Structures are given as structure tokens and as C-alpha cells.
Image (cartoon, rainbow, N blue to C red; front, side):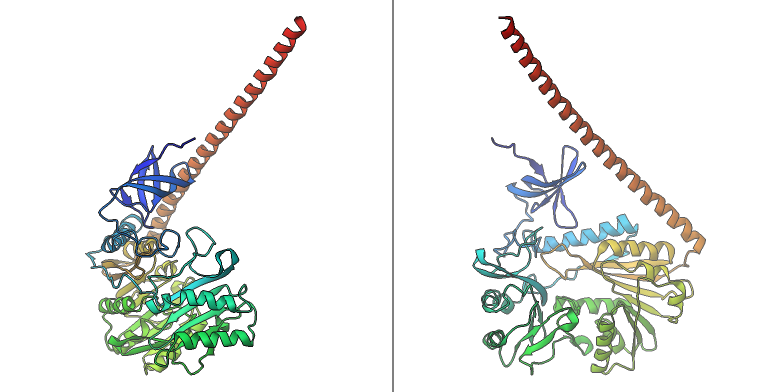
Length: 512
């Protein structure tokens, strides 16, 4: 029996890089499909109002389509947009940012910035790859997970990693297979620094002398005196990692030459994965922040000082705040390492629980840089009052939805104008969107009573959406219940007919 092919005309791309089509009143999100294409698709998740699907065949190609470079593309879950021409990827991400600002934030920047985009390939200097012994595959697999799966991709190369790191994948597989704990080493984390490459092996059990010898031999074979390959072990959490060989390797660092800043860091600590784009991002953020000697500036979610130290180099006084004590410790060390300890102060704080009182206790800031995780910084921004509001805020975001939500707070309740916003293509070939936005204080903050009215209206709107979703879910459940009841009734009718026919035939036989 053959199934009828399901064909769709693809209209656009969504924020995850999926093609969007409409078929019989339902929205279809199709992995691997592009705008202006006609595709055959197969659904892997069906809901009442939408479906998720894979592209089975492209009947008519889009001019946006290109040949994926990686042979593992389509299986590996590390990239989702290699089939999209590179400049089109950037345009899609810019549209995602603008749509989120308009739809969620109800704001529009006065200036849409030219996107920051750098090399398309070999950009990723930080990565965490999984490792697993799979005898059916001939040994140990090292790589990223497959799409929507816990399986590890059978990788032999990776085009987003630096070439010399991609070349290590097959030798790594072979070396880990030889270890005594080859089934107890589930992860390899890599960090590519200015002068050294580091591999951190998550060892669930202690290694023996023969294993140590294998690690040393691997380092000697694939590193050099000029650029060592240093091997680390991590027996438990990230804070337990330590170097094994060679012990005299240079420190792991990245640099921001424009600001004469060198940043030492541990391989398990958070840093940006794309150093070239990071340098341009820092420069753009500081251009908008425009720090001046004598100003007091806050760097919220400061990490190890990626923005703090370049700001301090301008002569401004900078107060960095971060929720992780190890990162604060590293930031303090980096300030001293760069001779900026007199211009910088750091403090550990939970910036998701800031109040008007705790923010005011920090003293008045002339300007503020905010670089939060994906959850955004809404509580911090809500804590701003007319007395404590910085005249300028530069917001670096890794999630356009939470940036848009926070922009709504700044523009509609705190008296700021969104002067400019634009994307940073930190992760080419993925749907990940980084961006930077510049807010300038141009009006008064709303009063608490005015904010309460606004929040009540927003809550009512959210409840209305939830009520509609509940009604839709109830209608879907009722529909399924009716379908089940109809199936049960039809089945019972067939049973009744069968037994009736059987009784009739028996009666006829007895009559004869």
C-alpha cells in the first residue's frame, strides 16, 4: 500500500530555521525546507493547529538553498542551517530580531544596525562533545548528538571547529577506545586559546598508568612545542578539572588587542565560542556605551570581565556583578593580570532577584551594560527608578525573545528610547541569534500605579491567550473523545451485526 504524498508550498522561515507552510488550515514547520520551495514532507509530530515535519523531497528549489558542506549534515544536531546560503542566514536572524521586538516588545529601533558577521567556517573555539563506546559502530564515537536524539553522530570531521581540532576526531576515537575506562568517559570538552589547545576528558573512574601514557602520547603526537595540546581530566563537576600533561603549557587565554586586554580562563569556564566575532561585538557595545573617564559604569552579568576590562581601559570606573563566585574570582584575577584592579570592583549577586532597594544601594551609575543569559534581565530592569536610572543602557542578548520582553519594560515603563539594535552572527549555520541594543533615557519612569495598570493589562492579555489555548485543547480532547466514541460504536455495531447474522444462520439451519 502506498501513502499519498503530502506536498507544501513553503512561505517563510521561522526563528529556528524551519520552513513554514500552511496546509488545510494547519501551520506546518518543516525541517530542511526553504521559502519559495515546493516540498514533499513527512510529519513527526501532529497537533490540532500545527505539525512538525521533515523534508522528504524538494520538488522545486529555492534560490536560498546551497549544498551543505559537512557530510554529517542532516544527521548531526550541531548545525541546522547549512542548507541556507550564508548571507540569507544572516538576513533570517535579523528578521527574527525585528519580529520579536515588534511582536513581543512592541518597540522598533530608530536604527537597524548592519549585522556583525565573520567567518562561516572553523569559528568555534569552545565545544563540548559526547563520547560513547558503541561496539556495533566499531569502537568509540566522539561528536555531537544526532537531531532530536540521544545517539551520538558517527562523526569523522566537523567544519565549524578549527581545522586542526576537526582533524583530531578520528584519532580521539581511536585513543579513547584503547583506554581502560573507554565506557566511562562520556564527554570531551575542548578549548582553543591564543597559545594552547586543551582537551578536558570527563572520567567517571580513575585512569591507570597505561591510560596516562596514552594521553601523553596523544598530546605529543598532535601538539607541538610552539602550540601544545594539553590534556585535562574532570573526575566530577567542572571545578574538579585539572591538567595532566604537559604541565608547563602556556595559560589558556583569549585577547582583545584593541583594548590591550588578555583574558586567562579555565577550559570549563564560560567564554564566547567565536573569538573573532566576540572582539567585534565588544567594540560595537563599547562604541554605543561610549565610556568616559570619571564615569561610573555597571557591567551586569559580567562573567570573567569580557566587557568590564575594555570599559575600564577607557578610564571609567566599572562595577561588575555576576551570580557565580568562581567567575567573580576569575574576573578579579583578570583585572589584576591586566593592571586594571584600581578601576574595577566586582561583586557576586543574584541578578534575578534585584529589588529597587538593592539596586539603589549600589549607588548611582552613569551607564550600564547588561549581558544576561537566555532568561534575560527583566527583574534587574524593573528595579530601575527615576533616581537610579542610568542615562544609557547597552544590552547584549543571546535570546531575541527575552531581549524584546525587556525592551518593552525599558521603553514603555522606564522612559528609554531604543536607539539601535542589530544581530551578531556568533553561531553561523545554527538558528542561535545574538544581538546588541542601545537604549537612551529620554523620558520619566512610569509611577508604580501606572506600571500596575500596564502589568494588569498584560496579565489579562496573557490569561486570554491561555484561555484560548485551553479552549483549543478542550476542543481537541472533545474531538478525540467523539472519534473514539464513534469508533467504539462502529465496532459494537459490527459485533452486533456479526452475532445477529450468526443467530440468523443458526435459526435457518435449525428450520431446515
